[in-house]
Image (cartoon, rainbow, N blue to C red; front, side, top):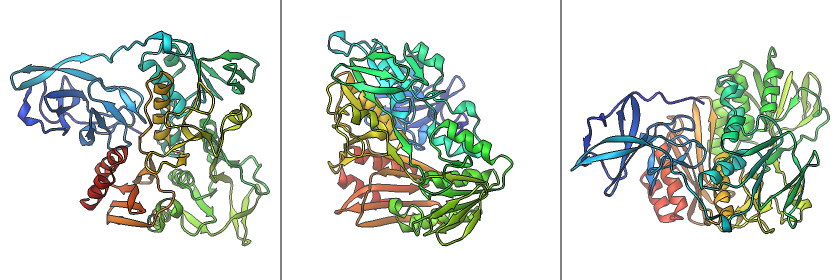
Length: 517
């Protein structure tokens, strides 16, 4: 995590530019008053916003304009050109936005514009909203409700302090020791006070009564709701191996988990990571950055092959091997002791610390007990409504209709969870539309980042462009002669263009984009 130190480049918008200098839909990097800006022309309209993404500081001048939005090339955050609002995760904070002064065809920057203040007709709105789960979906939903003009009470219930955190960073820079902890909370308690949202931490929900529109917290507190959003996420699966309950064996899901791993490896030399999932391999990379010797154990032959294919899986494995990680593929742990992990072939690996990453399970217990439809997640429609009136679900816990295949899917991606939370908020307010956003995630392995857009549970073939060795690569996953997912390394523009084509459900454009790549 970090910020993009954009040097002041391009034209000075205080002096101004000619309209002819702006290409249709092409961001132009400029500056004014010591701040980097981007200028975008759409027909006769011209927009000026800040040039730096409010998520991790990506350069928006290298992004993509889609309809009335600009998308960040790094992690696909989506901002309104007109207002600067962050309308698509993973960004939550708006961009600064400026008016334009026109004198004929000459354009210059005007005054900074404040985000719009919206109001809603109270009659058709829920009397209050309760959000269960202070993760990506819940945090994004709470802010979207207020941004859309909802002013009635909101109660935001999370399991533990500090509330919403930047979960992707827990296995990446924070665990590696290159991001300070003050970067990790998404928002502060004071932020929610200013938003007039009651943040409840350490007192999780124990029961939901949909017909009475009431939840019961662990403390016994009763909270009535007009609408309820369940965004309880998922829990790490526990390893069913003798010794897995020992104190030096960890999972990674929460800030407390990441802190515990950091404390556990401090002063140690050897760690074993069980599982070659993305999170397991990110943990391995982070521990190598701390100069911990790492062994990775996994039952499959090639890491990530089920998700990205064998060639890309081998590439990621080779990256880790170049950085000193030792792999034990095709193996399972048989026993864990305070100092070692014994594999099913009898191999004994020294292990002062063990981290397991063997998948997650959606937290559906509350929904099941309340009689909601559950099938590998809480079943929702395209606007995130559950089987109970006034009850919605979003994020890792929700099983929703895939807009491409039409089949129900449950996808565990951070940015997607935020976007689902934002979409569910609009649905709660009666402003919902069928969810069309394409799933997107990124995974960081040393100096290489993989960007994945779409969803390919299965594929018939993989088409590729470029070179993995040169870190300039794209792969298209094809099912029934249609591209269903795209993975890129070093091709951010292609990833953004693929996302836009997925959103339009435009298979022909997607194929053309890839052919021309």
